[in-house]
Image (cartoon, rainbow, N blue to C red; front, side):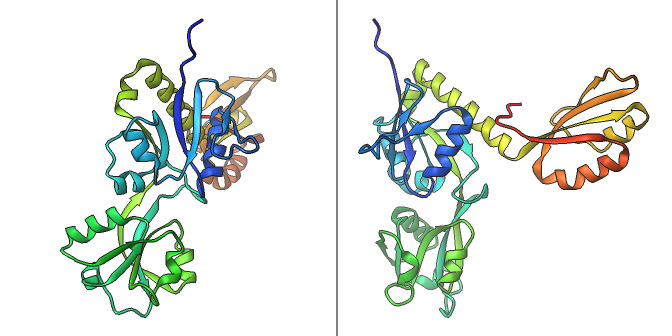
Amino acid sequence: MSETRTLRLGLPKGSLQEATFALFRKAGWDFRIPSGRSYEPISDDAALEAILLRPQEIPLYVQDGILDAGVTGYDWVQDCNADVHEVLELQYSKNTRNPIRVVIAVHNDAPYQSVRDLQGKRIATEYVRLTERYLHQHGVQAHVEFSWGACEVKVPSLVDAIVVNTETGSSLRAHNLRILEVILHSTTRLIANHQAWQDSFKRDKIESLALMLQGALNAGRLVGLKMNVHESCLDAVLSELPALRKPTLAPLSDKGWYAIETILDESQVREIIPRLRKAGAEGLVEYPLNKVIP
């Protein structure tokens, strides 16, 4: 009997964990954490061997081949300066689908107007390497110290500035801080080890993950819409409908009536349904989608 091959996959522990598990579940892979094994989620796919790690650690483990692939932030890939193969950008985060920003933040009352004003100052961050490179690019010398978190409470009593990631900016505002400069925008990425990417089994598995994850993400912003339309109103209704390609049109058993089905962005529904109703559409049904793969 041949040995079952597996793909070793790093998944982010912490703020992204639940969103990541939910996305994989929607894509078709369910992970559960057995009692006493909080860092080793069990997958319903025997070909996947997952481990939970801080996203800061995943890029280097993938680079070094300890992991075949991983899900982490572009910010951490850049901070580690990791040499990995980027497979897919996954546009999701803890609370929204928006990119996060890695920013330099200072107290609202501080006199600083640009990064150059931080010459000789003290900066706390988890992004030590990224921060040092950014300062170097701007000709600034400052003391950059590693922080284990809770950077916001350190300004201004312990440090002059911090470099942190922010999704909505609410935590910065709550601590009376303002953004001085944005260092980079970051989204979640599926990355792979270069050698694993050249392995036919592992590459096929990674590409399957990427396809289904992208399909699940696509479905998250789209909905299906179906309706019945009399032929006398058909042109008016069709003129209101966007679609990935064209709406599906099928004749009904009642002569002169058609069923129309389409896919559209969820944000459009509230505007389009009233217009479709006025144009003559009947029996409108909106329904959620699980995966959309163009």
